[in-house]
Length: 113
Picture 1 (cartoon, helix red, strand yellow):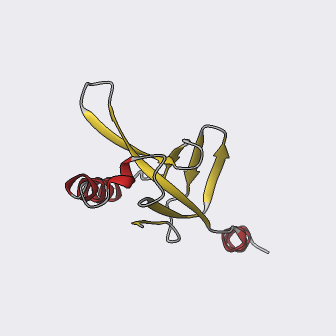
Picture 2 (tube, rainbow, N blue to C red):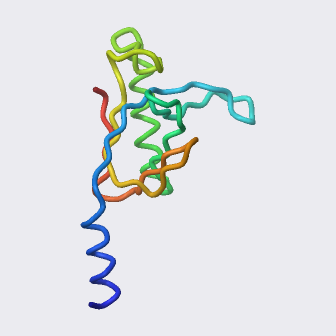
């Protein structure tokens, strides 16, 4: 089996993980408002591996939609709420006690739930 075939087989063998997240708002090191995802169950940081500028901009628009609709879905911003969340599905790059990192590939998705 060639290296390309092994890589394809490894990709197919990874299972999809689903994580319920909330949006944590914070002030970044430059003093500007920022937001990130955290797992509702553990509080771990959730990184969805967005290295591409277009992907990051799309995600920022997604987060902006949550901020504009805070009154309709307040639980998206609360760890303790079971009502609303950001549901992230995809393959994990790594799973650490303080962070989950997803692979940014065709199997990655995130939606409000």
